[in-house]
Image 1: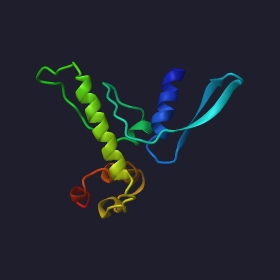
Image 2 (image 1 turned 60 degrees about the vertical axis):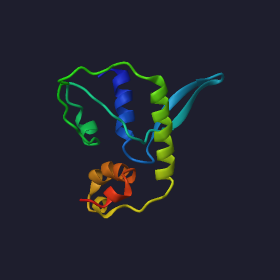
Image 3 (image 1 turned 45 degrees about the vertical axis):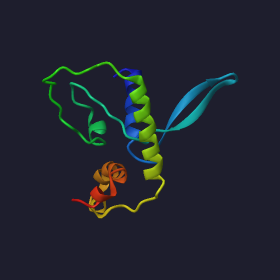
Length: 131
């Protein structure tokens, strides 16, 4: 595994749990400085080969199949920016409530609980209690 791959893997492995940080060095005028970065958040990955075990255990996997119809590859920048603003507003509105952990998530143990808690936190309230 080359150095860049190890660094990316480290960021992905550390980003599934809130509060974990990744150390990085930054070049400043007075030399290099160590900076701790918050890596927590949703990430979407795709590939044609299996992920390494450490990453697989921190992922919710969706098996995909090849598209059967043509897919548009042109992005409407105006619509994309509008969607981004809506998603950001939803994020602030939803995550600022300090919600209690739903019962369905409380039943999960260990890493499964850590993986699904953020997803349930952003799910509509009517869907959060469903098994």
